[in-house]
Image 1 (cartoon, helix red, strand yellow):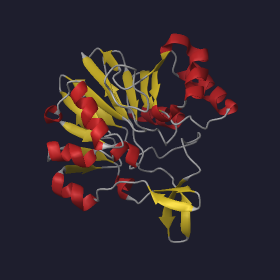
Image 2 (cartoon, rainbow, N blue to C red):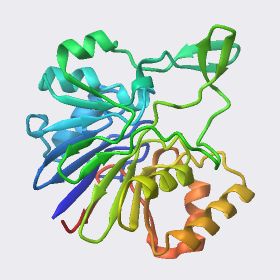
Image 3 (cartoon, rainbow, N blue to C red):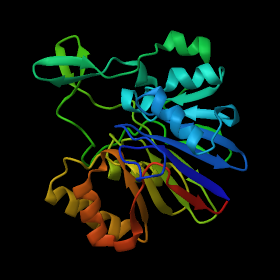
Image 4 (cartoon, rainbow, N blue to C red):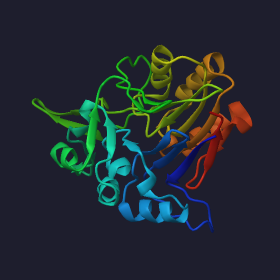
Length: 277
């Protein structure tokens, strides 16, 4: 059995002893190994929830980072302090400085650890192509073709020679888990766009996509955009189970639930989803 646990999310169930914050982390446990996907925004929340869930960092085989933003990478240093030398799977663009613009000020929101830091403390696995982390669990690699809308924010920028420019999110990846039932997609923020990500996986992997977990950055998607996504999911990916959280947005989750019913679920901190090998 394969077990995916949401360790950290923006929302945690009441009276479960878990903490919440704007961030995300998944624990992916298979007979071939354990992978930590993203490290939340802060070390205290990540470490508290791991302890409450009975999960030990010493058991982790490898890590993957969905992208650079600090709500996904904030606990990275603490993880490496607990277990140095872990393989970490990332895209080449993850070390580009990233900023959020609010109230007339650009604030750094990217990685706080440099590439040099990580090379000294971990085994960096940098590739734009899909990489197999453990048997049956892959990175998507860079999602280069993006005909559909991205999961973008008007506040996200990167510095460029000609001045500030909108972040193109070329550091964004998701994970693809191969199961006996089909492919399971695990997203961090899905800044590349949900549909673009699914189309990319169809081109590079074999088998039906049966489930999507995580943040899909539909928070600011308007009614027409959600209607379009629903139509594509119904046409190309039904039946599809959706375990949604983080940057998906409550309105988007409700709209998807109205279209797909019980196949749409909230993925709160502490949620466990199981799949057959």
